[in-house]
Image (tube, rainbow, N blue to C red; front, top):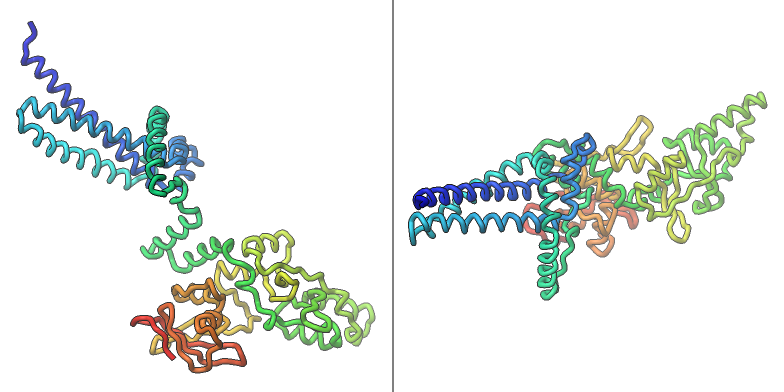
Length: 442
């Protein structure tokens, strides 16, 4: 006959061993959930490209996040409930009626420390590494539990649907651009990324969201050549210009008939003088013999698309038109590149340096034509640019009129003072951040 004490001892140790195994499984599920949800898909892709098959499996298993989380939670809850039940039975057998309370306390401590905090802490410290290790077994688990998870998903969606809520597993996911922008902002705040590096990368990412109209040189500021001017006058104008390419028009500025490159013109003039053997041959030169056909682009073109077109056409210069074909402005490849790397200046640039420095009161003197984006980038401000491209345009939009010189406004947390106005254009403003509450001043 078997000894009851030996049977009791065997059952005791078997139950205790089962609880330990279940706690280890719970730790595995908790760590896997944290690692697979916290791991960067970009880093996993980089590891996969280097031959890490575990990282490739992690990418595959995390592609359906709802199915993944459902399988892990199902497995985790099953092992936690089972371990708690076994612990209750074990302690009740040993301690009697008080075993239930003791089992609850002991299992709460064990699950919290060994099955939740410890595995999740380790997983969050190296999510890509852990995700690569657990991906294959978790993938097998999701396949095995797939029928149950599918039923649970249908029940959950049905209940949420009753309350008018719809679930979309991919709706919470950031776009790649948003992930990179967020990482750059965090890195800059932590001091790991320099402001200049952050601005360049964000500028490159933002090209697809911005249009030609936002950065073009307005038609009122374009330097153009009248094709009917005397050749000497045309030559003097081109030589005096800081630009190498100039639009050529006839009769009115809207009627652009071509674009002249200074180097092409000088080569042609030099050739004409040499062939004629007479310097006065330059006075009989026809500019239309060297102009290039103008390249027109719509004002709504995205900057990244326009940059690709410039590179494809091997040209750096385009005239911007609206939907009616009217001339709106001018854009160059350099303008687009400046949105990434900042202002590009050389010894021929005549534009004033727009580096902003505050005065003793903390005011910044800003040109009205300065873009809001450039202002925000230089000073790390957050002025909105949805309604206007330039600082002057923002003030006019908020004031709903063209302010007079000396008028002061406060909006969006900043104080704006109109310093100078020329006709209907605000040419210069004084701006500073507000410390007190926002309001309107006059």
